[in-house]
Every structure is written in C-alpha cells, then in structure tokens.
Length: 384
Image (cartoon, rainbow, N blue to C red; front, side, top):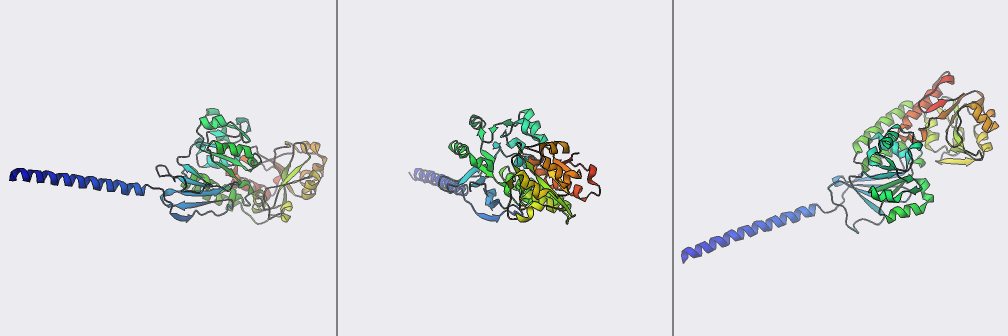
C-alpha cells in the first residue's frame, strides 16, 4: 500500500513539474509576444541639411515616419519582419508602408534619377512616361528589357495594371493636384499616394537631398547618405564668387504666346548664382521658387542685356540661333544671341535631378572660360 502511495505521489510530482514547465513556456511566449507588439519610441529627426519640404523621424527598431507631399500625409515605414500598427494605433492621415517596398508606380521623372543613383530602379516596375519620353539611359534600358513598363500617363494611370502589379505606392508631382479624381481612385484601391514637391525647393542641394527619402523607402539609407555627400562635395567644388557674367535662363511655349523664367528663390536661379553667374530676373523674386509666366516681351525686357543664355530646350525647341530668330525676331535683339553666347539644355536636363552637381559644374566651366565660343558641356550644348 505504502509502495503504491509513493508511486502515486511520484507521478503527481512529475505531473506538477511538467505543468510548471508548460506554464513557464506560455509565460515566455507571452513575453515574446509583448516585445513583438507595435510600439514607436522616437530617436529624433534625421539630419536634413537643405530640403524644406520633407522630414524624417527616426524610431527604435528601424521604424521611420516620413512627412512629405502636398497632401500633408505621413508615411510610416515598417521594417521587414516587424509588426505594423493595428487599426487606430496611428492617425488616419498616416499611411503604413511595410517593407520591402519594391512595387512603386513612379510618375515623377526627376525623382527616378535619384532612385537610379541608389540602384533601385527595379523597385519602380511601372512609370508614368513611355519609353519615347525618357532620356535617362538606365531607365530606357530597363524599359527595353521589360523590367520597367509604362503604367499610363501621370494623369491617366492604368489602374488595372496598378492592381495586377501589386503596386504599394504611387509617387507623382504637383501637376497631379489638378486631377484629384486620380488621387481619389488610388485611395479607393488602397494604394497610398505621395505628391512630391521637390521642384519648389530653393536650393539645388535641397532637391538632391530628396534621395534620403527614397533611401528610407527602399532600405538604402547608407547608400543615399553617401551619394548625397558626394554630390555636396561636387557642388562645393563648382561654387564660385561672382564672375561678373549675367545669365538668361528660361523657355518659350510651343505657340510662342507665353514665356517662362525661374524665380530667384528657385533652385535653378540659385544654381546660376552659386556657379559664379548673376541672374538678373531673380533679384526681385528671391522669396519665390518655381516658374514665373509672362509674355515674350516681358521675358525679352528681363534678359535682353544678359551676357549668356542657358535656354531650357523643351516646348519651343531650337537647335540654332537662326531657329530662334525665325521663331521670334526679339531673340535677335538680345545681347547673348548677338554675341553667340547661347547654350541649350541637353534632352535629359529636367529628368536629371541626380546630375544637378554636374550641371552646376558645367555652368561654372562656361562662365569661367576665357573664350566660351566653343565650350560645350555634358548638359549645356553650344548652338551657333
């Protein structure tokens, strides 16, 4: 009897131990579950030196919150394998983007060059410009290879393609703000939109610094920071005190009824000044960015005495001074045209945000040349 009792007690002790171990196991799992719960602990702001139109807050665990775009949205970037917030844990104005983010519809050509700079073109399988409209070599090659496809014009996206490709994010320029129905459709499909306004930045390096935003989205922060520092060094090398040369920069509409010049506070105006030039139109608009629209007569009055002309060769395109004068005789009365100091921008000029430092180097080369008669650079082409 006693032997049986001892046996029963032994069995009960073993069961108690097993139950205790199981309880500990459950407790441990619960503890791990708690550590896997979504929680944001701020580590402060990422260093942004020049850009004014976006910011990035850093959080423990690799979480990031991007504040950017004309819509006033925030974008919570959740690292791969990390828990995302549940409904109600972030405000309704914050989009949640779970990494890896590798299916973006990119309707901003200028930003695509920055994405190329950090080797992430494969993250943008759909773009808003057909192959014939691209001048970035690597994008053209990718479209020829079929790794990047045309996803419909920026204002008329192919929404069926958006769904079939599993697009995670739509990036567009401020031009889309005039098409709210497009943004509404993306919202309806559950695809976040980021309307980037880098074109409103006042410093050339500010626009280049947008590479940091894409570095966060694509998990390439180190590469983005390295690239930006390289560009900053190139810009500093091209920066100069005034060389005493005034510069006309702008373009004419294809019909010739309107003319455009960048405000003095715009990054293009600043590129001229930083490269050693003087930008006469910009002196009264240093507080403004973007384009100013005016008549050809007003454009002529602003730039008629400029020493050099850097003509942005789209809309009305010219490949010789004769073409210019034939289009509008007022060109023939401008000092830069009379003296043959006219350069047109290369086809990739407006798409090459990543080449801004190189463009400034080109500007400085022309402005500093003792005899600029035959100076042609990568992004500014001399015409005669």
